Image 1: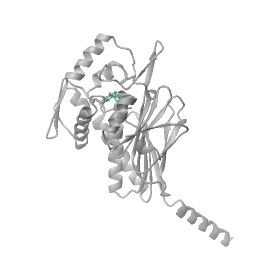
Image 2: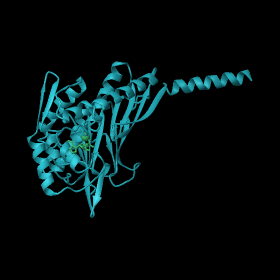
Image 3: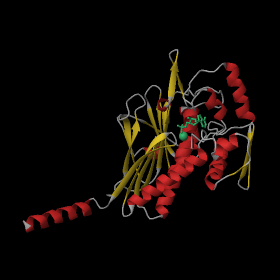
Image 4: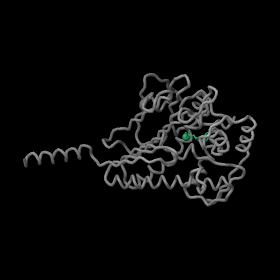
Length: 329
Ligand code: AMP
Ligand code: MG
């Protein structure tokens, strides 16, 4: 009997050593999406707990629908003393608007509301309404100085970047606290910290835009990075046989219909990955490929409406799927 107990003890020790480490995981609903946070290593539980608190803090500052959030107060016309997070998001969002030629536009909120994407009360607005809100998006301005911000005729929405920003913040803070391995799934956004506990790379599936929640078109093998997907299939409504998706084209005021079904961005920085997934979806395949050629800070997987898959050069050796074309520099 004693030998049996010793054997069991040895086996469980081997199991603990073999798996390497302890693991803690938590699922939370925040920023209008389901988030799954998994951390490996000693003190994993506390790291997950700290991450959940941090997400709640970001949500409280950035939600457009909570009347007391920094963003809602800014949209209501107040001059607001911004937290460091909101200031950084605003600054970077305004810069990304310029860099993407307006395909990503944080001032799109009047149009997002008009189409009902904030409340879920969807409707196709009249052309005159779209023209009116489009004028607001184009002429509104935001002033930012020394952490104080004021919007003039503009309303902001960080829906296209908040989750990516949150992933980047969590990854940075976890690393500073000594975490070596974590997987943060924030809705359609994935942020990894380090490598998997067994030191292999992470495998991140690219959703099939026409399949169910568990069907994938391909798999990316990545190290520490952000992987963010924007797709018309993620949120949309249908009216009179037409599908209207939640990503709007700031050039027209209508849902983007650029011939792309989804865009996945792989980038070191989560904010950039998230902002660009939205922007490149608006741009369409050719403009997206040109934009990629002009930069060196991200890679992309683009799926067209007719099911073709295009992958930028840097991903050719870490993407696996039945058939795809490589976009060259
Ligand atoms: P994502 O899923 O990251 O592509 O973000 C889409 C969300 O960002 C939408 O639900 C809107 O709240 C907002 N949005 C829609 N179109 C744009 C756009 N062209 N630029 C910036 N934000 C947008
Ligand atoms: Mg985005």
